[in-house]
Image (cartoon, rainbow, N blue to C red):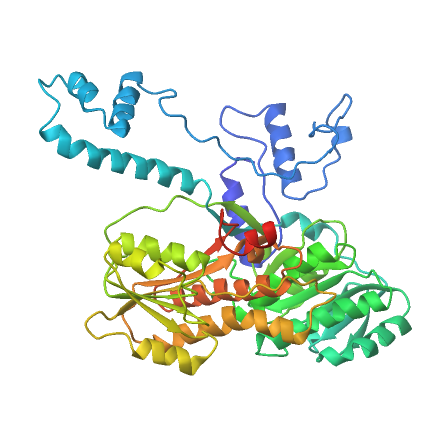
Length: 528
C-alpha cells in the first residue's frame, strides 16, 4: 500500500490501545529490496522476531568488542573541542593573546598605534569572560540527566512459571498479574526488622521459589519503608535462596510530562535498590514502578518485566507502555539574566565543612552580603570567617542540627530583617558506609536524618519566603548506586524527588548529584 496509509493505521493502533508497530516497504523513488530490508530492520529494533536466516546470506559474526573483556562499560563522550581546531588560526591566536592579556600583540593585531588606554581596561574583562566560557563549556560536558526510553521488545515473552512470592503489601492487581501469567502465587507479609528469622523459615518451607515481588507502600516514614527491603534481602540469604527479588513501587518516578513528580519516600526505595543491585547481584531482580491501577494490560506488562532474560532492572509500567531508565548527557543550560542574583542572606547547612566552606567562598566571591553557616558544633575552621569577610561577606556561624526542626526554626527566625533570607544551600550530610548485610535500623535512621529530615524542615520553615535559591547537595550514589552506601543513596534519592516536587509547586529548587570532590568531602576521608 502507499506509505500515506501507515499514518492512519498508526492512529487506529493508538485508538484501540493495541501494542503494535507499523512499517512501510514502499516510499517515493524507493521501492526495491533495500527498502524492504530497512523495514525488517526497523521491525527487529521494535522487538519483532525477524528470521534473518531467510533474508540474509553469508556468515554472521558478532560485533568487535574491547580486547579480552568482550564488553564495553563506558559512555561514548564527544572529545572536548581543541582551541583553534578546524577554525580560523588568526582568530585562535587573537583569543590566545586575550587570555594572556598580551596588550602589545593585540595592539599589533588590531593595528593600534599603542597598547595602553582602551585595551588596558577592556582586555582583562575579555580574558575573564573567555576563561569563564571555556570553563563552562568543559563543565557542561560533565552534566547528565535521567530519562526514560520505551521498551517495546520486552512484551515478546511474558510467561511465568513456578512459585512466586508476593511480599509486603497485599496487592490484588499484582497477584492477578502473576497468576494470569502462569505463576503459583504465595503471599508473605513483611512489616518489621524483627521478622528476619520468621521470613527465612517461611521462604525455606516453600521450597524452590522462582521469584519474589516486594510491594512497597506500607509506611510513610522512609526508614520503615526501606526496612522491608533490607530484611527481605537478608531473609532470602538466610534461606539460601537465589530467587530474584523485584521491588514494586507506585509513583516513585516520573516518566513523562503526564506523571507527577516522584513520591520522595518511594524514590528513596529506588536509591537503596540501586545499591542492593551491586551488593546482591545473584539475588536482585530489579525495580519496577507500577501505575495506580493494574488492569489487564498493565498486568501483562508487569509479567513481561518479571520474565527473565531481558537485562532491564529499572522499569516503569505505564498506560502507554514499558519504559527503561537511562542516563544521558544533559543539554547545556542557557545563561540568562532571569536567573539567581546575589542578595540578602544565604543559609548554608554544613557550612563549616569542606564542601560548605567551598560554597561559602563561591557565594561571597559573587557578592552575597550575608552568609549563615550552620553545623552541629557551631565552630568554624580557623580563618574561614576572616577569609569570607575579605571577600565582602558578613558571616554568622550557628550551632544547629538540621534534623532538629526547632533549632533550625530559630536559625531562620534570627536572620536579620535588613538582609532577608533569599537562598539556601543544603550541604549537610552524614556518611556511615555499611553493607546492607550489616546495617542496623539505628544506622539507617541516623544517615537519613540529615538528608531527609533536614530537607523537609528547610522546605517547611521557608514556606512563604521569596527564596530564589534552594540547592541541595545530592550524590552520584543515588543515581547509579555505590556499594556500602545504601542509606546514603536512599537519602539523596529522597532529596532529588523532593526538589522535583518543589519545582512542581512553582518554587525554586535544584538538586546536584555530585561525584567525588577533589581534595574535599567524604570521598577523600581515610586517604581514599
